[in-house]
Image 1 (cartoon, rainbow, N blue to C red):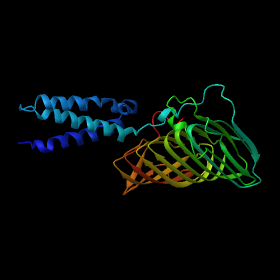
Image 2 (cartoon, rainbow, N blue to C red):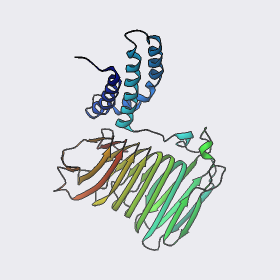
Image 3 (tube, one colour):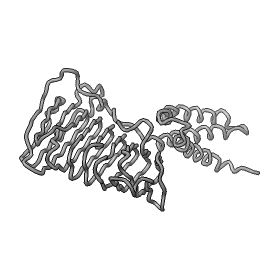
Image 4 (cartoon, one colour):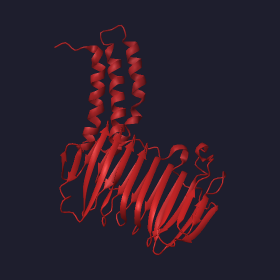
Length: 327
């Protein structure tokens, strides 16, 4: 059998590209190891050097094979685990210990309310508190304190439109916010984290809607004891970890682009996913069945709560009930 060397490199590339996600899904290679595949990039230079040294010999193709295999492993690791850019320019690190509080506020919702939190370059911690009161405390960099706008029915916390924190590579002046939201009123919540990290624990919250956008960040979102009617999560060049509700039926959409998302499903809930994916890896570590583009867990029909999600994944890794959990 004759091998067309013009196509040999492409064959090696696609074999490596598909092998890494497959080995991760089968448990042969861990997510941690696959996530380190990018460290193999010097092999590209090595392959180029081999090609130059052997360019006039029958083994000249060897350098191309090394380069093709390395590119395949790099992109395969990206498909299997997604990129982790949460510490871009140090944004995932909190402020210096003991930094002064530069912005704060508190108030109550008179009834059903809305809350919007928009963090840029920093660490966001959101918790809940019984009653109808909310509170906020922040340490901010030298470009200015958080912008806080409130009334009896709404709360808006955002970073100044201009931020020098992205250019502070030491991460010494990143934002650090602590927000406490009430559990009694029904709240429509919008959360955005751009470059940084977030720990969002919405225990016992009553959410009419939750819209979370994660960009170049690492965010843990715990909804396990919350009630959420409408859930929308967007993960872009980020790592997201979402514990789904155990005590309410939820519908919504999940979008993952060049990132990774872990979904943790409680035993009391059934899951149905309508998937639209391209160049992505989806690992559903629980019994279920595919019908066309829809996957339904075996527990869905008899579950106390139903979680119905539209999944749009592009160059992404999505894992349901990963071994390490979502916390």
